[in-house]
Structure formats: structure tokens, C-alpha cells
Image 1 (cartoon, helix red, strand yellow):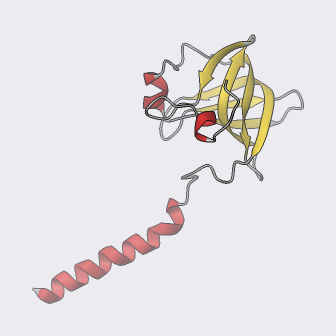
Image 2 (tube, helix red, strand yellow; image 1 turned 120 degrees about the vertical axis):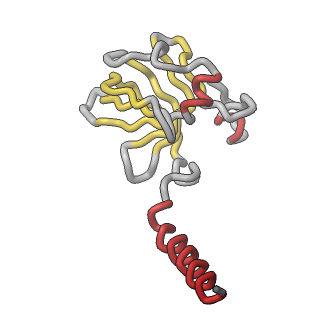
Length: 136
């Protein structure tokens, strides 16, 4: 019986160790350092876990992956598919990933009206968390 428990324990430990390389999703925003602004035409909405995302194309034809907060949090603060649509022109303020066409979105404007702010669970914005004097 002890031998079986040891084998099971080792199998669980090895399985956990083998999964480490596959669990290296973004899990943090430390690589998103450069302040960035871009205007895009929304081509696709991916409003689902783990993060809501907007896919948009800029005037140069580059396709951007725009990362928002998790869906439950966005819905709690009033952001859903009724706020933004495909073919809508939006202005993004965020932080760009150094190697990908990807942005952690802080704010989204449409027709100069603020339609989205990245919020953490207790309502503070991502800019507040950065200690920024700026606000959306």
C-alpha cells in the first residue's frame, strides 16, 4: 500500500513539473512596458475567458490583438457586446508588448467618448495600479 501511494505521489509531482512550460501564458503584464496609442477598425470581438479581446486593424493594415480584463469583471463594470461592434473605429490607450502586435488596453474611446476602462476587482483602473497621474 505504501508503495502504491509513493508511485501516485511521484506521478502527480512529475505531471505538475511537466505542465510548467505550458502554463506560461501572459500571467502578468510586466513585459507590456511601452505606452502606446493606436486607432483601429474592429474586425472581431472575442468576448470570452480568460480575457476579453478585440482584434482590430490600423490604417497601415496591421492586425492588433487588444487584451482587456476578464469577462466577468468587464460585465460587472458595464462592458459587453452592446458597447462595441465589429466595423467600429476605436482609439486605444494602453501598453504594447515588445515583440507582438498586442496591447494591454487601459482605455478605449469611440467618437471621443470613453467606452472602456480596464478595471481590477475593486474598481481601481489599470492606470491607478501603475501609479499613473493620468486617467482615462
